[in-house]
Image (cartoon, rainbow, N blue to C red; front, side, top):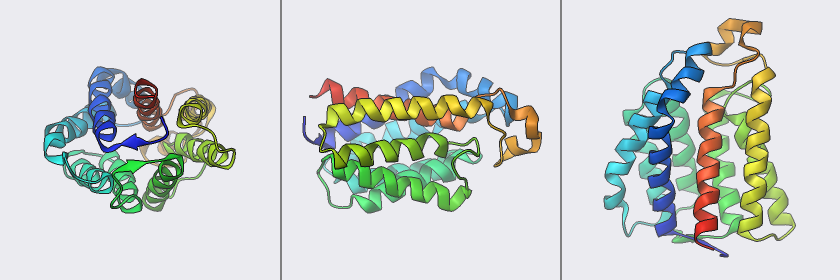
Length: 213
């Protein structure tokens, strides 16, 4: 498969909702150690709202789908997750306006702009123990794949490897942003919940790409 279709983008969002529902308790347990213990509940609520709107997204271009997804998350998700994930998808939507399918370059551009949106709100950098510790390696991996002119399947596999490595790296970090930063060194040894949900989103995307090759 050389492109990701509008239908497959809807499938991605649908499957994210399934995974967030399944992992709700696990994500909240991770958050209980260093945050407000509500990350799983919030992510599940937000993507269930997105799931409820997917039918209305039919026929829309991919940029509009992502923009509407972001707006839905901002309006329905509490805590930091709503603004951060909402901005991520809204910025993706702006970057991909008018697109009915995405090639590897488009995917890289969309996720890169989404990351920029997250960094703009949260002011987090690599190593701060946040979701950007997953998304920065993902963007770097996609950049390499574009430069190497790799297929979407190969790029997706490498993207997941980068996401998983980034996620594991958060365990031994000291949190420097958000509620977790109040714990200082006591945050060491705990996997970041936002990075965990981000890694799941990346893995779901790979699944959609592989299923439709």
